[in-house]
Structures are given as C-alpha cells and as structure tokens.
Image (cartoon, rainbow over all chains, first blue to last red; front, top):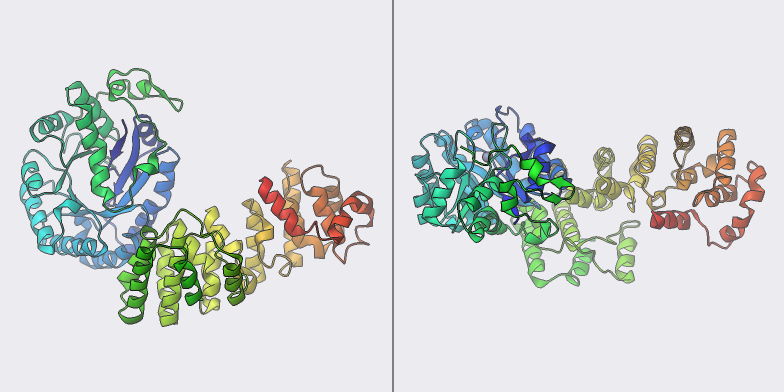
Length: 303
Length: 291
Ligand SMILES: [Zn+2]
C-alpha cells in the first residue's frame, strides 16, 4: 500500500521526516501554502515562500523518492493584513497554473473576519477562472459555524463542491460537509485537532466515500507519519484494506487529480508497504531502510 | 518568428491545445489581462506535451536559424514552444509592458519556465535591457537554467561584456558543461579569459583533478610562455581528448613556432585536423557523448 499525505508543511520538517515517510510508504505529498507561525511583513517573503514550494522543497522531497506537489494561496490569518493581502493577490496568478500546483489553498476562515471573507471570495473566483481544486482550512475556534459559512461563500461564488476539499473536519462538521457534496479531510494532529482513534469511529459511521486523512504536520508538535500510523491502527481495528487505501491514497488522488497535475504514474516506481508491517514492527527492508526500526518505540496512537 | 513557430507547432500538436493557444493569442491581441496571460504562460504545460522533444525537420530548423541566427528549438517540447509563442505575442503588442511582465515571470519561474525565458532571450526586443537579467541567470546552480543561457544560445556572445562572458565560460567549466555548445566561444576569446582558464587548470592540477581538454580552446589564440608550458603538459597527458586538444592549440595559425617543442607528439593528429575530421567541435561533441 502507498500513501498520499495531502496536507503537510515540509518546509518546517527535517530530512529525518522525509526518510521516515519514504520508508513508511508515503509516495506523494501535497504541501499547502500557509502562514509560518510568524506573520510576514512583505510580499517578497510570500513570493520567496511560493518559490521554495515550487522549487527547492520539490527537489528536497525528490531526493527521498517522494513526489512533492503544492497548493498556492493566501492563508486566512494573513488575509487580515489587507495592504499585504492585496499585494499577495497580485502575485498569485503567477503561480496557480504552474506544473505541480494542484489547487488554491489553504484558504478559508480563521477569525471569520470580513477581510477573511473578502479574500476567500476572491480566491474562490480565481480558482473558478483557472479551473482548479480548492483546499479549505477550517477555523479552530467556532469551527462548526466557520465551516458552514465557508461552504456558503463557495456556493455563492459558484464553485462546484466536488472540486473542494474541506480540511480539519471533526465529528461535528463531517455530516454537513459530506451532505453538501464536498470532500471531507481529517487532520490527524496530536492535542489540538483529531486523534486517530476518533478517526476510526468516524470511518465506522461514514465509510470511506469522499473522506481523506492527512497529517498537516508543520512547525508545531505534529506527526509527519500520521497517515501511515493511522492506516496501521485502522488495520488493527479491522477496517478493510480497501477502505484504508481509499481514505489515505485514492481519495486525495481523485480530489486533487482534478487539477490534471497529479498522476499515479508520477510515482509508479515507489514501492508500497503492508500496514501490518508498520503496526507489528516487523522488520521490512526497503531501499536499505528498516521500517521496523524506523517505527519501533513509536506509539501508533495519536491523541 | 511568431508566425513561423506557430506554423511549426501546428504540425506537431493536437487540435485541442492549439485551439487553447489560439484563444489566448486572440486575448493578448484584443482583450489583454495580466492574470490571464500568467495563467496561459504557466498553464501551457497543462495543455501541450511537456515530455517529448518535438521531432523537427531540417528545413524547420533551417528556417528558424535563417530568421534568428543561432537561435534554435531543437530538442524542445511543445509546451516550451507554446510558451515562447505567448511571449512573442506580448512583445509584439507592447515592448515596454513586455519587459515588466518578463521580470515578473522570471521572479516567479520554476525551472522549466526559466529555461523558456532564458533560451528565448535572442527573440526579445531591447536586448540591452535583458543583459542584466541574463547575467543574473548565469549565477544559478541549476544546470538546466544555466544551459538555457550559456549553451546553444546566441544571446551572451552578442550582448555580454567581457567580464560577464568570461565568468560564464569559467562557470561552464566548473559545472562540467560542454564548451563547444557555447556560441561565439572562439570569436569572444580574450587574453583575460585565457589567463583565468590557465589559472583554473593549475588549480585543478595542484589538486590532482582532471582538466577538461576544452578548457584550452579559448586559450589557443593567447599562448604565452605559461600556456605553452601547460600545452606541453596536455600533449603528454594520457586521457581522452588531451592530446587532441594540444594538437588543436598547436594548429592555431599563431602557434607553430611557440609550440615547436610539442610538434612531434601532436603530429599524428595534424592530418585529421587538416582534413577537418578533428575540430574543437568534434572533440567537444565526442567528450560530451562519452560523458
Ligand atoms: Zn496546514
């Protein structure tokens, strides 16, 4: 089995993470543009960041046999600096149709301010114009209202739900998101978002259709192996391999594949792994890497 | 050139991407929008083949170089040529605005886009404004980008001052690039470059590293005592292309006397040189092929 982690901020991760991800069967990743912990003060830092997503980070991933894609966008937090936001909006069109850019993202709401709505709307229009998928960040605070409001805005602009992945869902939001026809992504992130045991319960209730799991690993305490670990835990809990593969590989491939920039053939040479090997810590030699060792001492449960 | 490239591309691409390109050419002409142009330039790789080099006829290549001497799209892909066409359409419409857009594109370019922008430089208006962009480009460590400027491109020889030119040639050697594909490598040779190259060779020798036989090509017209000693060493070196390079330097019209002492060791190659079977280009080509 291979994995596609459709939300991971590799610019904040080390080469150790790349190595362990490759060993654990992560064949491809999507890196959304986001804020970087510290607010940016110049459009030039945005531009250099975008350049690194389409340039150096892609190269860095390739050294570990991982295909790197990205989404480009103005994140909601920094949308509140309107002077800067306008300048960023001017450079976005230079990036969104590039090779390996699979959508506009991650965009959406943070504080749910008027400025955030303005730039969500403008970027949704841009995605429509360029015929690109959208990757949505839903807010941590007042998530349910913010998620509903995001979908209202998207529908008002006329974006088809089938081209939108709503991310960072939980038990409270999933029903409406799936019901309105969107892809529903779940971020397996320790402490603040969703643990993977809860994820298994959600799978039991909603099945795998249009559901995606990702790590959103970034500069905070997070886990770059969240997707393979959750897959292993799901297998242990009796979820079928087919369902596991659907949420951790096939669905993100389908959703972002709508950009035409993401094809299985791009990583055909990557070998898959058996999640059982991950879970039981069996020794699995692949490209000189000992997956058992890579995972040993690691608790698969992320809570 | 726009019309020529478009007609060549039309013979090698499907109707659908060609229709897409036509639509954008029409928009550039009649209803220009900067964002749409950006979408089109970067998005060409989403419509045209980006993996296979176009299979061009000799006559296609000849008509291109007839119109822009030294410029070529040999070995380029369909999306590369489509991007060049879009740039030319914009340049035709508004030269000053074109420069502004070109700078924006370069500031945001991925590797394959940068290759298009740099390799198309000889077709753009206001070359004097482009020199600093091209020189900045040669500072890259990405081989494909460096090659787009330095190799098979008439722009540097036509527009670089000596210091830019010399840096580019030295860097080509540093990066292991084939000098014979640098257009104007002989006509732009100069004494400063020859000295810098010889110094570089001395450094390599001191470190026990091999020296490319092509390094001596721009030195051939500037043989002084030091370089004469160097060439004697090259003539005695047992590695592919070394003796041939020494022979080629010897065969330069100004050198028979200066290099008299190596005559015997290069003698076997002189006939090949005389009948045209051994030139700097054939030597560079065979070294490149043998990697
Ligand atoms: Zn994120």
